[in-house]
Amino acid sequence: MRVHYRHRQFGAVLVTLLGGTLIGVLVAAYETNWHPLALAVLAIPALVLLLFHSLTVEVTDEMVRAYFGVGLASFEFKLGDIESVSVVRNRWYYGWGIRITPRGWLYNVSGLDAVELALKNGKFVRIGTDEPHKLVRAIESARAA
Image 1 (cartoon, helix red, strand yellow):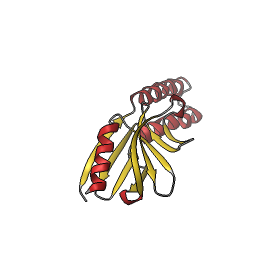
Image 2: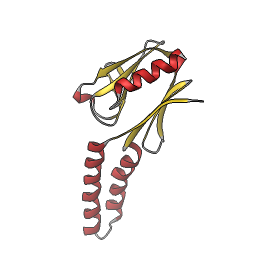
Image 3: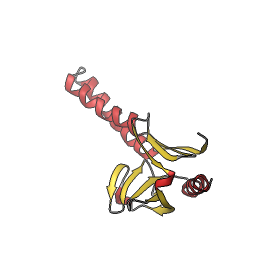
Image 4: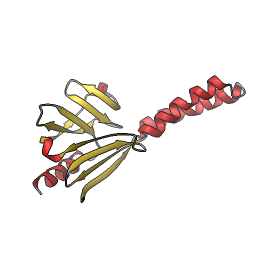
């Protein structure tokens, strides 16, 4: 399977916020003599940071695939299921992560730019990216091949 496009977007703001939270909880855990509750709370931002620090998008001969962080949260769409693709701009309050929006599902780690996939089943999906035009060209090129 040939890869037409592969790009990893780093979620700098998300990592900064979660990293700061992680440091704060780490200090609190130390101050409480590593209390078990503090250690349990420490696991939450660490896990979120591991799972959502980046979003990688790949376009192959057969599909558009994307995954967050280490790959536990992933999704894919067959090229044949895509009706059309376009560059869009998300509203700021749609946020980051995996979200449901008025236009359908959004997968995003940073910024407002995204690529919207209009699926043949009538649903829409948005993939956040800092390279929206390159991603659209890659999807269109793979669909045409």
